[in-house]
Image (cartoon, rainbow, N blue to C red; front, top):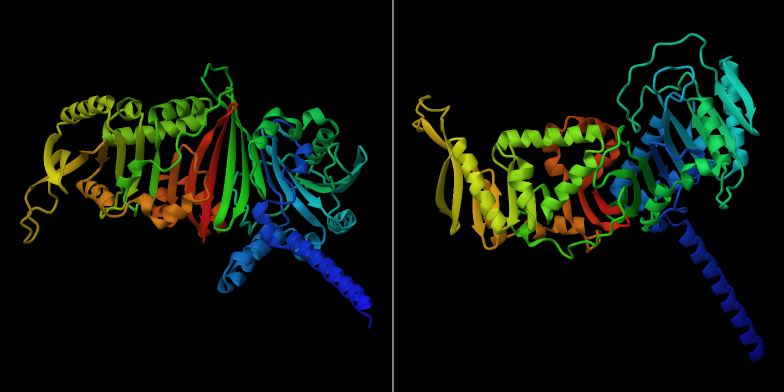
Length: 576
């Protein structure tokens, strides 16, 4: 072979290999589930055009379920992969229970990269005088012919078994549904909603579907299969699609909120928050909330945008964790740390007062604490805390959890402590001092009768001193605890290991923006029993999202400032 021919052959071979390598890399880069770390194929749900601007709730998953399962398999250990696969299979079977549908056979051949569920406005049913919340489920199709065939086959089977199946053409779209019974039925009782475990689920008496084909004005793919329990909701969806000014995708609050959420996302939610029935002159009130959820190698990372009524801009106040955390023990399963509690409470009070139900919950929680501590929290505590502060639960040898509260010393703080001493005296508590770890400690104590006095050989004194509150001034901080044991743990934390030096805490704040307004930290396995006792509704929430709570290791929340009246926050859910 001549040298020139050899070089020509070599160059052609190299170019061929480069082409194959580039093609292979492109295929791997587009098919690998690790791409989901940067977000799903789309950034906003195309199905938003099917719902109105006033929709109470819209939730979308912006990735094919099979790709999500593949990503779970990547991060699972070899021993966990079979369990992870079984969990996904259980979810699929539960959601399709008693529907005669099989995910692999009926859904998988055509399902695309979007599943959107919207709760429609109340009182959708023109046959019912009561308020009922409807739903619209929109599933994107990557093969319009296969999805059409799926619907055709499904309704053919239904029509052979049930003579109430109806079909109609509405504005060029084929609607199929089961006709409502003529006799008015008694409304079914409201049962706890459990979307991931529905062993007794059945199709509603009215069940409707429609297939939409085409593209939106913005060029988005609109190949969708729509499901609902009323053909009226499907008709409304088609109307919203035709009238751009009516649908959610053109809502100013919706657009403003998602412009502020810039991270990759695989799911999102949008909530139009209930507004007060009567006009209230509030400094700030919330209008809507948007949540974008992305995937992190250690769990789920969510950004939130709360659209409020005022056009305010504020930068985050912190660039590192507050130093008050040095007095929080590393074993604390729950902690909150930030600055300017007075301003935070003022804004929170203004926002929750716009919603009567939320306001009742907050007022009830505050009332319970005030009754236990005999203080007015907003006036006696929140009103004077303007610097750093940290609040945490401390593991206790008793059944009840101990608390630690740390805040910076100030002239207002000293006056507030004098007032707390007056409150203690009015409750007939004694105020005494002692030394603990070379620090002067002040305790509010009460004399009580020992329940063990005189039993058997027990020589315990009939009078026992019970600490109702303990405080100390250490450097520039005031420390308050509910027991001497908790105070000892707080002082020891500064000497040995505090929460801020804990590896689990550091991992839990690592994905969060360094510029923020503080942290809300929850170690779920360690504090689960505490919160289940305090919040009975939590058990129902756990059942509704059991796979998530079973794998949840910690939850960390931080706010990241405000832009043009939109308050932003980041949430990290660390998963096992």
